[in-house]
Amino acid sequence: MLRVIINGYSGSMGKVLTKCVNEDSELQLVCGASRDELDVPFKTYLKMSDVEETADVIIDFSHHSTINDVLDYATKTKTPLVIATTGFNEEELGKIKEASSIIPIFHSSNMSLGVNVLVKLVKEAAKALNGFDIEIIEKHHNKKLDSPSGTAVMIANGIKEVIPDTECIYGRHGRSEKRSSNEVGIHAIRGGTIVGEHTTIFAGHDEIVEIKHTAQSKDIFAKGAMAAAKFLVNQEAGYYNMNNMLD
Image (cartoon, rainbow, N blue to C red; front, side, top):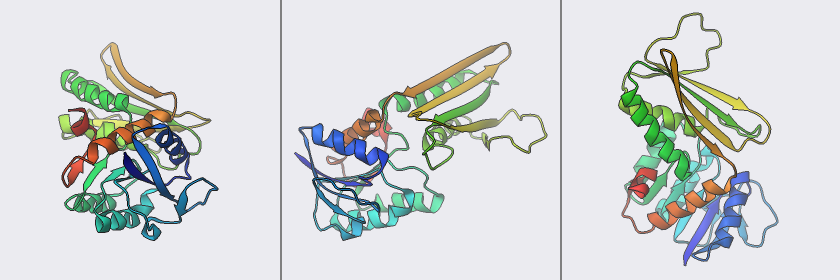
């Protein structure tokens, strides 16, 4: 049985992950850390650096601002780390990559199996549909903090791998020029209780191709993170993502 620490247990995804971990016979929840305390039936801390217990793996569904604290604990205790948090800047991403030389780190902006298959399909479409205009539309609930979503950025980065001169345009407010052929528009919608929806549009002459993923519950992200944890504990130090697990 794998012993798990959840960083960010009190957030919306942390609560879902806690439920799913407790329902999994292969996992045992050791404790949780979060800036917001909840009355829960397990040991909790305000931050990872306060954690006294050790575990086999950490699953992080918190906020990008806590990454230094998480990495410090994980590297000191040599604990594999699954990072499902989004919104990292380049400096924070660099620290994650640096820490992966010490411990195994699994990092994905979206833990859904379906989303990661979508990214593969988008890359294939970008190769095949030469000359088509590409736009990405993402929709989320009104409590989501980061914009655009990490998944939208992940899709855009996949397109860049295929079309290196791609330029990402985040909305078009204030622009008074026609669309360039190499740009990918990324648009964020926030409202209600939308769990997550990502659509990539390929618009050509007289035809449109759309590749879309809709999340119907947050359980899919928690279960993906749990699958990543089970995969990661058998790996050497290094930087892993969903492609490594799927392959």
